[in-house]
Length: 104
Image (cartoon, rainbow, N blue to C red; front, side):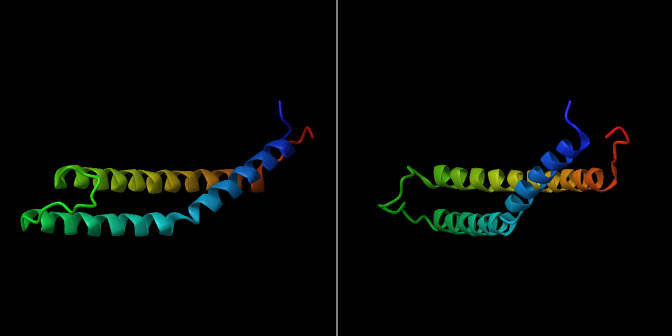
């Protein structure tokens, strides 16, 4: 069994990693905004009857939009997970700040 000091050290390492990842939240939000704008653009092109660009890797607009939507969903899930991890960070920090093991 790890000592309280070892546990606190481990939790501090986790906190640092989570905070470093959380710094990327704005990038995820920007990616979501960009992907939503792309979806709007694709919907407009599809509605207007524009042909698929020659350079496209997709067979049709539906496939392209599905891929973009999956990217949006993935980024939103990542943000939700980050928010949960930040709650865990608060709990870890509370433990670090308040728990003492009188046996040490």
